[in-house]
Image (tube, rainbow, N blue to C red; front, side, top):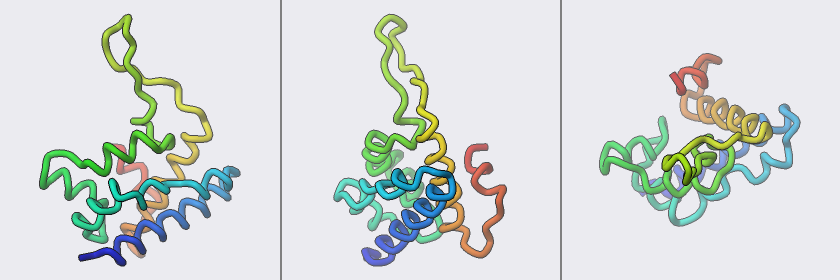
Length: 133
């Protein structure tokens, strides 16, 4: 099992996000970034699908068609735009809710950090944006 390797990756990621958040002026927010990744609902699937060079959620999706860890994660972490959707009864559908700027900033800090962690010395400033395209 990859318990220690997965723990190291998510901890290194959190530290990189903290550095980015400090530079962006939201340092306190960076302290609490992604703490849910240490919860059993996210950590155990992360260990089982660990690869080290990409998110374990991607491997879980390949194996099962969805990622239970991601479903848990996006519902608890406000820096994910997926968190900001709600059902509008009058329209009978889900609609986006305006995401506060501090979480948008954290989202970008997160994406840059994830790219640096997974790509390591191959990192390029275009990678965080490429993730969304």
